[in-house]
Amino acid sequence: MKNLGMLFALAIPLLGMGAAGQMPRPASAGGEENSQAASPPTFYKDVLPILQNKCQSCHRAGEPAPMPLVTYEQTRPWAGKMAAAVEMKMMPPWFADPRYGHFANDPSLSASEIATIAAWEKTGAPAGEARDAPGPRRWSEGWNIPQPDFVVKMPKPVQIPARGEVEYTYEIAATHFTEDKWVQMVEVRPSSAGHVHHAVVYIRPPDSRWLRHAPVGEPFTASMLNDPEERRQAHETTSDLLLVYAPGSAPDRWADGMAKFVPAGSDLVFQMHYTTNGEAASDATSVGLVFAKNPPKQRVITLQLNNHALVIPPGAEDFRVEVERTLPNDATLLSLFPHMHLRGKRFEYDIVHEDGSVETLLRVNYHFHWQLSYKLAEPRELKAGTRLRAVAWYDNSKNNPHNPDPEKTVTWGDQTTEEMMVGFFDVAVPAGMDKWRFFIRRGEN
Image (cartoon, rainbow, N blue to C red; front, side):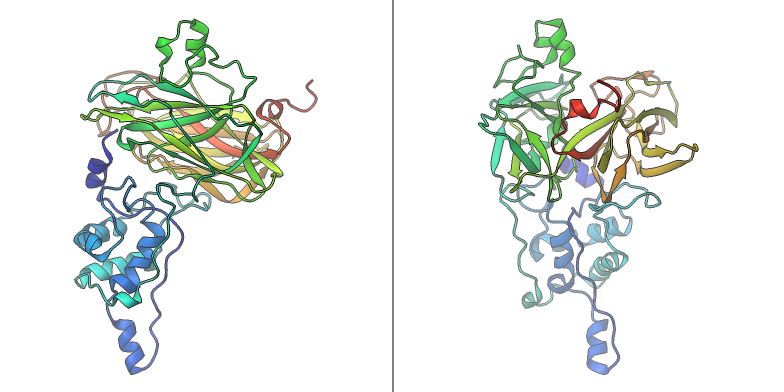
């Protein structure tokens, strides 16, 4: 992908993600109070609370946004672009169709917040009185989760060339855990975020035979493995995922009583998809873990709906691909994370009911540069036998500005010039049930 500085500049960069901000005061009757209510918004009193709650997770030092929006001096030069971006709803980035579903991590500004920023810019972006400012937002240094209990870093940096395609890169890092761990929060932090198209961190338990002959502690690719079976394994695994990361995605924070399970003696396997952007770099991605304070009642596992058989014809501008599966056991649906490449256009998750009716859980107007996870505002209880469907639409026409070759027939592949159709989703199951047991249907041995 393009580097983040260029990306933000093209997108009229601005606001990040967080909780709801303050609302402007309602007008009240009476001379002096009415005059105060009619006064223009100021930075310290009206705009800064919005920035703290919805922007500074990205727009502060050390985060991917190219400019901080913490002080008045930093923010004032961007007032015009801020107003334009929020009025067009380009920022904060959020691509869910509002007709379907409600999501706990929706960072969208309210109509009142948009009006406040627009009015502030139109009246000259005044600073106001510093005494009106809220207290500074406190962040864990280098993280968007509380300071991690444990950090696992790729042991050896990966050297990324300035140009060309980079084969999927893997690196296995030992945790050296002497006891089982329940992870309630987790965040992936690339050291060269502008080169990371996406990353998947897998949990490899000590009894797993997956990639057992691969090197530990240094990067490798599938083509470097001598065993043909292990070369295939690099692209296929039943191991559970700790976290999927893509630009714009947020850390995972599970509710009390829910967590991911990392058995004692496990390794973490980093699968890194790097893209070049004209500048050589090195990357040593880290993952931060916050452990649950008490053993949870439910274990979170990540599942996926995918269709490897996609074949997208040249010039097709609305090509549909779908996959449907039934849940083998009861589960609580927590979040949805669609993944496609440059020709991705829309992605949808549905429940197909027994009478044939379709209930849409999420429809995303897909944006390659902002691949987000959508956390359900209310977790959804799903019974065994529930039919889940994922549908993806692709634009392989010349009208797609991201399309590298509209005359090419496109099939499944790792590189962004190829395509993928993956509908990740997180579910909670009883704490004693692992991924293997979840797929044993009732009545099966």
